[in-house]
Length: 471
Image (cartoon, rainbow, N blue to C red; front, side, top):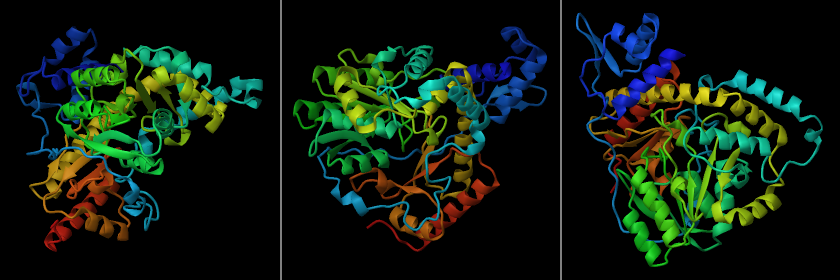
């Protein structure tokens, strides 16, 4: 709708400080003239911005940019000197499935079902299947259906990130794309540099593949690239594996300058860097942040992503741009998987090509932005006053630091009471995040979610009251 597009432009201006906090907004009549729209559209725009808490109305005065919802502090980013570590201990360290009857909305990083275009996606699947005809009975193209590769190339080209469709490989989800990349550029026993903290699923994958890891500290701008370069100079690492946009769990994004430098380091030292960019399309800005791959001149970046977080985890469909490693990557993928389901690829092709995917992204980003603000406001009211809560640039998770909390003991109590959540130690090989918690904010804050957050807050209070603190 027109008013949503105008609202998004205003949000982008506020986020980039083009509109100062507390400044007066144009009158409704002036806004309508500025964007050449009706008064009804102007009114809907301001009502929408009010609902999202970006502006406030002052009687007899007008509309003003609201003050940002910020906690007194955000979680600390521990700084340390990196050392390689084995992942063998993680096999039985934390098993989130043990004791839980089913995963809960606060645990898994996933969008709520009400935010997903189920019916329109089903229609695309039916149309895609109908168009296949005899192709339904043939083995799929091992690189991925050409129509889907072209649709994805056009989709990202429209957002300022062009690439050739023949350079893309369709995979069974992002984690599968990353796995193929790791097996392409490294072997058992090799050391891989990762973000700290790092998505637990990547650490589990690295453990299964018998890789060592070396964690690189996070900074406000992304990752400590000085340390990473030092490791490259010392030939300590075989490859890098970094999330770069709206990182899980801390919500940080690398700046464009950092991404450019990361690409330059990979090319200068001829070290492959795998970019796990599954959240890149869930930013709070209307403009897609360019991936590190954009600055890759020599093909040393392997860019991996998926629709698992943006659209449907059940499709199990992702992709990789392997750069100079395309032939080796494709061969490994072909002999391991013999292609990805043709009907699934056909359905997604229809959904992207008809513009429905982009429309869905435009809507879901605004909803996620509201979710994150709602969750933060609720948690600030219910958790201890010294709690630090992240202020993500995108994605759907919040990273909490609660001083004095023993998160492992909290997690054990939560499992006993069938409350699903993720704790700091799951995201690291180091003893640095014992008082940290990750919560998913991908579901709208309805009564059921509020009840779970209240339950979580009560468990935190109980744990702190029992004085079960980190030694």
